[in-house]
Image 1 (cartoon, one colour):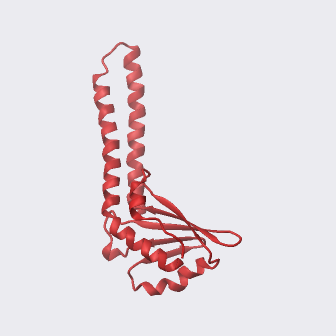
Image 2: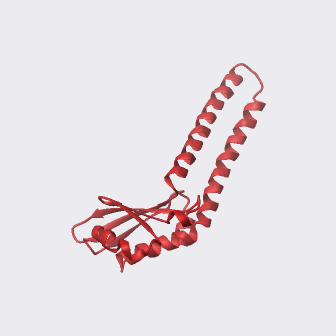
Image 3: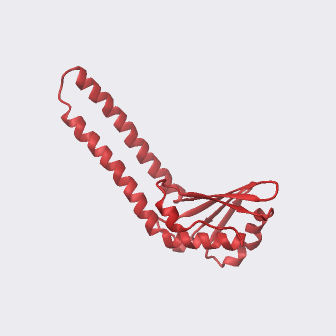
Length: 168
């Protein structure tokens, strides 16, 4: 049986979408996801498209922080490598990225305003305050994401358990 990563190790990663790799000797692992799909009695939702598989929590148990496990299957000569990535619901992730984009664009605009005020020998107090607010917002977004990852730990364990049953 392939060795899966520990949730505690995943939660210690700094990246917002933690990932890991698993090497499996079974060359027909793609078919296993289709064959064993009915064994989970609606405990896990499984979607498959070619070499990509998504494991997620059913809608009735899903919260805004519920994780999804994306598995990309890479065929090797004697084995398969599963590239696994935990992530939030795609809608939440899209909103999260738009907020980051807006904050980045705003920060860039404030840098231009800062430079303009500096060359015109005007006060930059408001610019400093707004830049500090943006930096605090970025830190708050990161802490929000980390806290939600901690909340999602039980469901992440459930998805990892399902993955281990597929490859076991």
